[in-house]
Length: 348
Image (cartoon, rainbow, N blue to C red; front, top):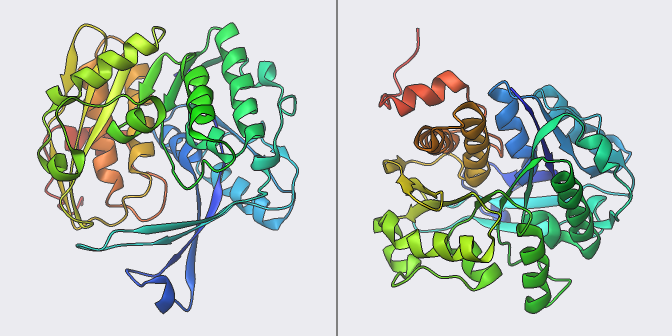
């Protein structure tokens, strides 16, 4: 299968064990992850050759993050080094009516101090078919936004397919005002062939809203047709986009979500079955696992958008059963769930 490159920040995740609150914790579980690195791990698990590009500090913690990627089969030879620290995020896992919390500690991280020219993108994209970035990376700093723009321009010139997960993060966009944020994201997204985002991403970045829908009150009972207007508006704004995809998460509680997805190709809207995900183990990385599954599906089934979308939703449904940021499932496990086997029976 053709090679994929992802670009972004990998962080150290520190979380109290189980469902403890920060104030109860005497120790923290350490895991490495981040939006784009999570996508890379998913693809590597599916047998797709993939490189993860980032900037890491040249110290033991940066080395641990790199080794986590290498352990999962992700290419790391395009990673550059510099700066003093790896970004950290603290996660308090919610349950039932108490939602999860994230506290960031990523100021002055190695990648936040990246600037254009540090990465040789022409070398990175040699013999590459697909490039993926997310809205998290340009939110880190102006330098990261500029480096991301540099990447999409080179990828476009070299004929590489480009995808994004818009991933709005309110706690990260601190270096610029709303108008500048929209300008950054509009320019970056204009280079994309495949755009993934939920209703909040489209509204916060581009003021595009689903017609007649309040996601906070209707989230668990959303019909796919409600997002057709969003998809059409996105394609009007970004004419290069060949596919606009939306995940449909209904939060009945922190422990019980519904999960589905829709894809619009400019002519037809495809939708998946709705999964009931109860007793969630870890929902962090759910969107990343969807994107990893979608890229794999679109590469494997280039003429079958429905199958690609079904694979993405099933893959991300399984991610909710796995502790940590990354989706550590195989193609056969995803296909088993796609086929309707959700029994969870022991495989002997």
